[in-house]
Length: 114
Length: 115
Image 1 (tube, one colour):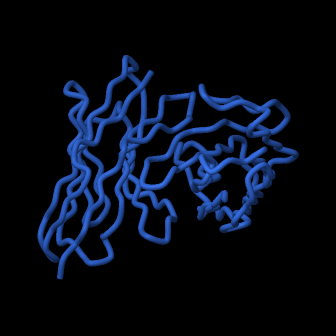
Image 2 (image 1 turned 90 degrees about the horizontal axis):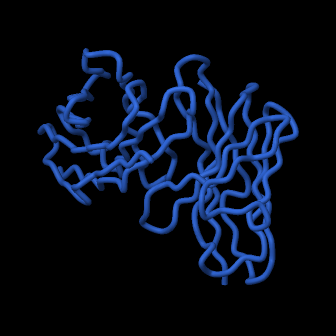
């Protein structure tokens, strides 16, 4: 079974600073997808960024980027120029190719301070 | 991307009763998923619901407790049966809504409180 581990239950960052959230996973699969989702207090799950395991290039979406280390099974999220609206729970998730059911880590609660 | 609507958004239920949560997608989707999020916890997959077949349940979840219907490609329901306070959670519906992208889109969730 695949497991996703987020070792930082809570983090905080000053507005405009950069923060990195950690995620590791365990799988014997070679083809899979990794995701970061954000869940603000409204509880709506919002996709932040997505990475396909066969792509070596790290995904980037505006202020959000990942450091994907396939051999180390690590998938960290970097948020640059943090904004107050980034305050939320962040979940790392794993999806096996062709099975398509998503498995989530325990989450990291990020607080951006003014 | 597609929009997923869930109702009720929240409800307070009495022990021993059952409640059905509805999930409507504004486009046709093949695969839908139901997740549970207990207070302060992560999301746990309850079952996968494909149109035209029985739902596939994860370990720890059974059909008698969480019956699921999937009558067409845009709609699904999850029933939480014979509820107890331990069933107090947020229940989220999700679907693969971008063909080939393998990304899950989520509804806003249904917060159930069982007294």
